[in-house]
Image: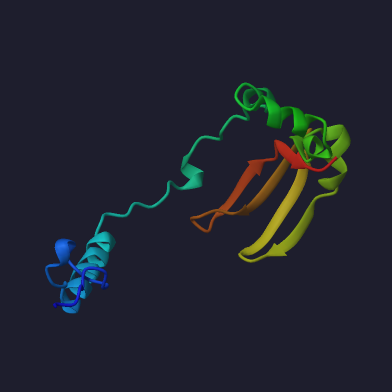
Length: 136
């Protein structure tokens, strides 16, 4: 009586022999090489994109009512909010500079606008307004 090899790893359907190990490795290697050959595109440069408008929490509530209600009744709703010169201005006045990984970042209040100046992707200083803050 012949042994049943149908349940062996690499066995072909119907018990008709096995796939040679070299063929398995060849197919796996070829698949990995081809997967690495596809064209890769860089993500868009943030400085070239217009600032996204904050949609507001009501936009989330339209589709995620239960999660929105849990969030609204928690302290998490206070974690991120619009900048308020009266409430947050002291963090930007007087102007402050601090060292970061790429050099120095400056935060300052210009009139009623909080501005942050740091190095952009082109390594040149970029000044952006602070429209949202974290904390109460």
